[in-house]
Image 1 (cartoon, rainbow, N blue to C red):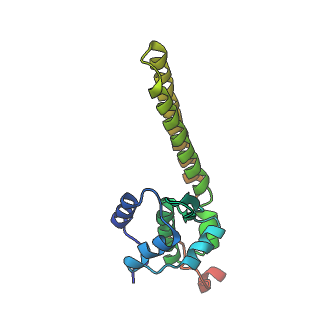
Image 2: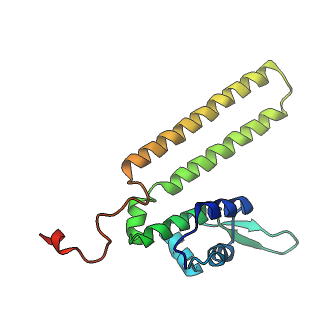
Image 3: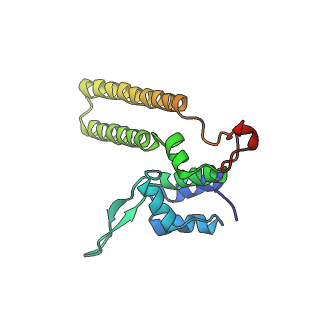
Length: 181
């Protein structure tokens, strides 16, 4: 039984499910690759803020209701948690040390991308004029500023939070006798 997915597996899953996955699909993604994971784990991770919440997506057809879909980044986040737990980190340590800012950074990234895409679509509707060209130039500056902001936020996060996967001085659990001295 594997403890986590490989980078190649993660990329394959992300490419095939860009729109997100239901809780059952997430569990199946891990089970199909022989990694133990359950819906109970998913619910706990969401409650602790380790994994982003699902959002409702309407079903096609009349009176079909909606279903909860998790953003595809949830799979990568769960995988990171699985790796860190295999290194004997507790969920509380993972929450405090590694994922403290992840959701906010990802929300900032998603929101800025969505906003810039909406501006670009709106500008694309305008007639080809000098004004439109100036607005596209302004949009390019905004896009660059958003990328610089995200780069700066990632740098700050890395300065504040130790790198994920960094080795612990000991394996967790009971202290080594020499540590008690």
